[in-house]
Length: 412
Length: 179
Image 1 (cartoon, one colour):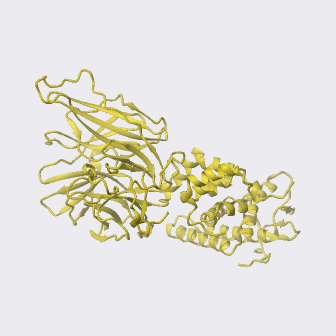
Image 2 (cartoon, one colour; image 1 turned 180 degrees about the vertical axis):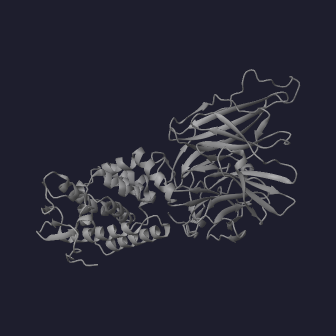
Image 3 (cartoon, chains in turn purple, orange; image 1 turned 90 degrees about the vertical axis):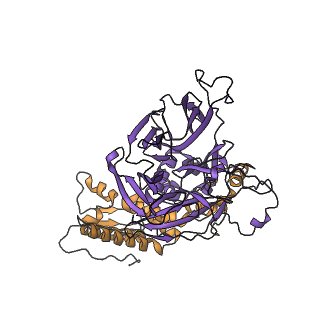
């Protein structure tokens, strides 16, 4: 029997070593041999590697969208007027278990439209969903520089939809779409949800469609939007295989409902919440923190925001006050992640502040990151190989004359 | 830690097992430690094999075997220390991690490979686990050529195929350690 050598090690052992590696190494090692190429591309391996990344919070990175030239407006509405300037960049910032942040490194992103700026829609498991006002949507894995662009999907106006009388200036219904993004754990698929509201003077309809990354196509969701009188009133939050929104009736006098769409069954659920607008509450934001749904309540009369957590998913009575943030937000206050020891929360506020908030002491310590843009929004990623077979993000600037950047940009 | 095949004598009164390395050197180890090596355990699980039999480990060098025995001996001691006490468990875990780090710290690539092959042949699950992590750490910033040499792998891509993949993901080749 020949003596054992490294080349005769069992493949499970090699796979175990590969599971330990960061994504940049794995992408490079695709070139080692055909066997390694096949092992790294194997969907079970990718799933196992991602699971390890999530459990250990490996390669945690902030993906930063530069929201420059911003006033008190939502950056989604800012079209880029100046034709001679390139759209603002994205950046990646690695952060470590001890709370340290590396410097911001410029990152190319795949939605490079001359006039419409790309905005972060949502993020999940190392993937970031971007969209722009031209309704182009991409799913992007920034750590491996791959992406997939969604095909265009029209909004279908139902034939029986009652429009106005013919002399009205409103000939077609107003349409408004909200999007969400998340992971369907049953089918191991990533999905984009579009809820479109069609409004005319006398009728209101909802159309719900889902894009599946596996099928690379859209389809209509059969289950109807649960309450015609209620519209989406928050950004989406993905948790437990479902996307969630706060929804309110138009009079806004009712309690805010929590609407959930299960990505596997494609069915809606509704939960009551103890929150409502009015009585000093000016804004409610829905987020996910530490594996639970979280609502940030702004009270414009008091100088604080309170953060509530739904301790037991699905149980309306389990909403518990986590902490009160004495640094009041003007526009929004978004909790991102807990620190490793769970004592602090990283918070993004008002497009220009990032700080660690000590839950017990109720104190904030500002985070300084070299190279960070003045105005920003963030997404959080871990090391993932999902979309390894996607399209490559091309490192090319749209315009010439971008030489001011060649000095300091780093490959990463 | 001794690295020259030194053979500390076992505790008086415990049962021992004799292991023979590829160069004929005999190691006498406590039974509990020997049973960490699944291959040795299987050897004695067979009917009619007396504990006095010397276990021939033809594919393991005496250097590697000495280190393996050292590791397993400490691992067994640490496992005995941990119990229900969370503090004691945490301390034992830290000690074990220190032990593992020390085992691989000074090792050359050849040394690590020898340990891997020994742990694989002797079927020691915990040791294989941490060796995987150690190897991962060692190769993560290395070039493709380095990895091929380490794992003794043939490059079975055509030059065109390799060129295409390299160009597509050129960014992944930056900042790599020089060979």
